[in-house]
Image 1: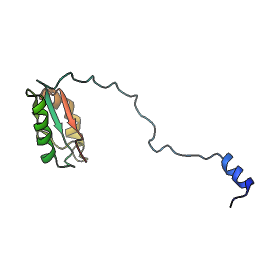
Image 2: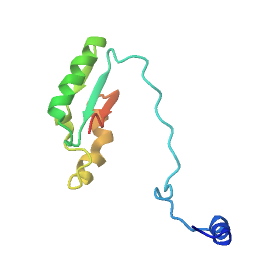
Image 3: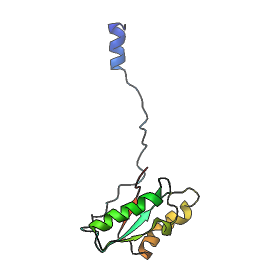
Image 4: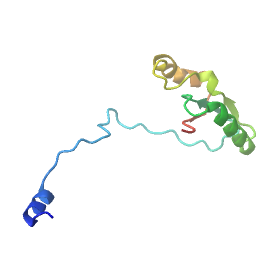
Length: 113
């Protein structure tokens, strides 16, 4: 059992800690407004191939097509391997232009794992 004196010292002590998330290097950016519907929209599928994309994306497509019959998809296979360290300089840097090229209105990314 701790003495009252030691207990008081521990409670009044100051400790230095390191914030585990680090400092923000850039100011936050505004997010895009939500689409009012997915009907008539083109959805890009982005994958890092870590969670069975071949299984999950077809299921997501099927479910979304039931709700939004005029939705279109551009398969994750068209974009390449997103976030792969060996491809970051090519695939990730080209992503904004690739999304424009395919006329993408929204993306599905991080669909499992």
